Image (cartoon, rainbow, N blue to C red):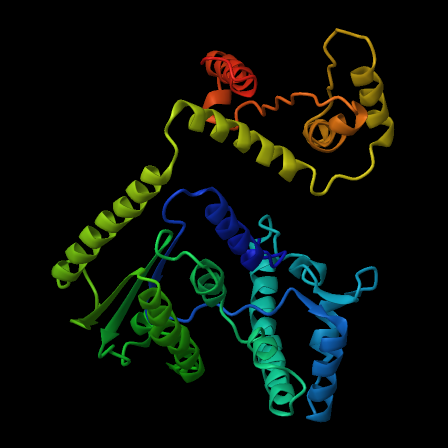
Length: 378
């Protein structure tokens, strides 16, 4: 994941899945005083990278690192520059068999990354000041993964009341004499508090999030606690705060789940429709990136439009595209092949829902769909 720079994409994909699948809460934010990891973009529009590079050269900076680590993909429209996997240039980055070489290459990378971060932030800020880049474009080079999650999980969401819970916790009087311990709670740069990170965090944590949640009657809770002793925060010294947080979290997660369940159609017909829709959504998702297979689809068309009453068996190695091809036939082709007839389509992906995970519920739900479609008694 680190080698391919996939951290941000994986986080966003998982968040999207939660928003799509979760009935109740799908985003709960625990915010404290660390802005967090700020990766450099994995892809940059090549024309924008050229602007950034030009600014850096004008300022007298060596841009060889950017030239080395970003490679242009001219097949994309417009062309984009892609951050190369770490082991492209540091071949032992993943080599666990030779720990010394792995540690050496890891050290080189974690020394290289801050240099590229600094260059891209400095160049983007200069372009912004000169009116050649808007604030959102500039902020893309300064943003932490957590802030991106907050934007997608809360700030850009319409219905936060039913799906989002926000917690923030501020520790007062953090002991900065113990830098190692303090760095667990606050961003430290060169043994000093990172003022830029504090400012970026405060903007969304203390301004945008409270306003968003209060304007939409969302669940928002803020805690202020004191730094106590050498460790600063511990169950023994902060028992009251921890108990309050646990109780508040439990009650409000339960409230959102119960609220979602009350909205769910629990009637017999509602359950049938829900089962049908779940499989149709899975079918639609399977064909989003389907290409080719024209010969196999033609064989399937001949079978469906022919007179054979024998089952059509499609088999192949795992990952060869069996599900996608059948989904393509079911969702996109069958109705066209059988025009002007209007066939009843029954789609089931075994094991993807409780009612398709064993034989009896599967046959029951299939019969229920037939009854529902032809308005027969259940």
